[in-house]
Image (cartoon, rainbow, N blue to C red; front, side):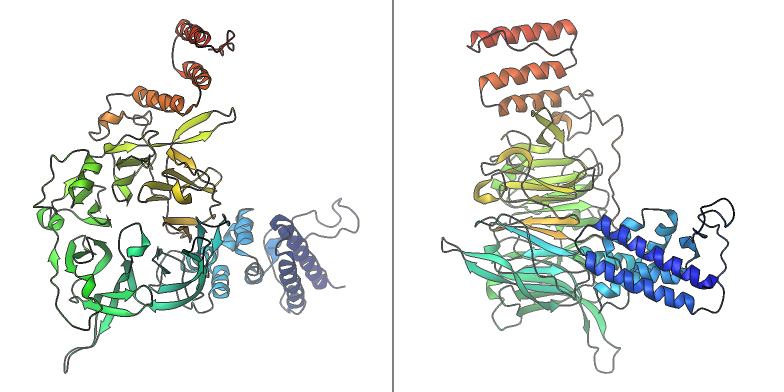
Length: 635
């Protein structure tokens, strides 16, 4: 056997050996397919190497001892993986699943460079999305596109019925990742990163109670292309979502003898039941919008449009007349928040039936409240409410820059640049997650309750959430743990199964019995279902900052709005948490034991702790607890 044949045989043996290691690390699932790919690649590589006429020269040293240098007899000269042509290594690696390619890139520097090459991800992307040919601008367009299409998925869990696990809906093959989704009365709409809006038609089944429930998305069609954003009735109940408003860009034909067509933004209205377009309004070519939200009743539906420059425009539409075959003109006017505060540049909007929330590019928050009942729930008073001027923006005083928000009917959630969650509004069902059912007229930081190894309830602050959702009387938070696994936490009313695992609800955030997908990025909850969207975008880097040491100890609830710290040690906050833990105990015996534990946690002197422990033992014996009680823990 010649030297070239020996090298080719060694390379084929290495490929087969590495394929076995990759299959063992991946498990039994997909082992047959992986073995077939590696076997074909190994044979092809050996044939290509044996047929080469030019001798490959590499400067890298071999991985083992030279022949005759004291090595074992008959072992030969080991061949390094770096001797392989990089193009062939990339071609072989591209046959691996995406999960294995990511794991292989974490083994060493050489494989990290190979697995991160655009050639590998171009082949993978064309295998995942054969119709996706070209990619736009970006640092890593092919890798981003491949991961977007590999991780895309829409998962749901129906609240009714016997099946209490996540299911996956049909995935449109034409979709380039998933960017946004919205469930309506009968169907689900998904917007991808290429601007294509998909219409997922659901299979409807009858429940035992005679109600119609959604089972799964059985088929899909393309509703429209060139879409930027879409919205529907902002109420939590999907029954009211009759129409779908789509903000899109369309090419308008030029006039006779004039210039060619121009791209103009427009709003198209579709029936959610059939996907039929019933109305269209086109704007001037100089106006470019990026977001649309709805607010108000059906007869006075206000469309709020956010421009690229951060200005808000609005127009009023009567939905009850949209299906009538007639044409009329609507007036587009500048919203008062942009007219009275021209220096503000709005970055995003959120709305419900009777209020609108604006977040500026500097992290400021401004509110519009249109009804006195919602205003009282949100702020606890009607002092500044003016029924004659409902568009007057109200500024919320917050200690840090706000990144995103969630708006319910009468409560809201805010996430700042440090990853802290602040809740405000009505707390009748515990939907603020503060551990009690007291309304909050200003933003209040909340916490979650879990079980420690000692089986006692522990309280920790929710930090760095991925997504936040505020429903009618409950709230959900999608968070990520230290091992990169995701979990879903919820608080508020648990009726109807809207908090899986907690049918009686909870006044603080608790972990729900839901298996969250690894790449989940957004969520939505309706009366019938819990939805989670999965699509990982590598260009979306974490934007949270580390909390300064001066603010890490906590802030008193009474000074959250002012930004000043009159309680630098966080004593008031800690005492509130201790009280909530005692309140969660069911019996007097458990409350006494919890109080003893809290005394041990508090920064007291040894004599003070002994005094409190002895006093608690005396009270416990007087209440009929019996016995001297357990020995106090060591201080």
